[in-house]
Image (cartoon, rainbow, N blue to C red):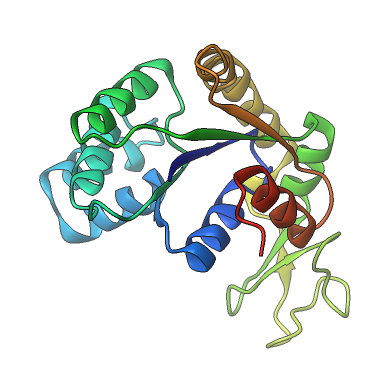
Length: 216
């Protein structure tokens, strides 16, 4: 099975993709992970990406598509792929169709994790990070035992600038403009399966497994 997990920022796509990959043997491909690895290795694509990342710009579609294409081409024929964070734009979706079609690996399903903007912003803005050891917490889902204090090392917990409400709303604007239209794009091909993204991580995982016919 080859699938894409889509949904708004804060819907938990990365967490759920990693869980499904671990439980069922999918190869989990995320542009963010591939970009960081390419930069670390100093590859041609990585060097191109780094210039954009260092200046705070979005990495162009062409660079991201090349990374995904290279990764998909290395997947063994019998192994399923789960894509998280790709595609995000129509050109990326069209490129994914071409690369999978060329390998005889059709896209089987696009899971759309449905979550309201209000709930997504609440999730995004609730994260706190320890200044000392880097541990992650969430004010709602994983709060520290003592407010603003890390359970592990006693360090101060703070909110990253990219977890602010203003940044969260900006991310949603991009999602509405560039990514949300892909739901219609894939929906017209009969590939979309909506899954309720409310609740805790385990609850959403169960819904995803049921939607994909993977329930234990």
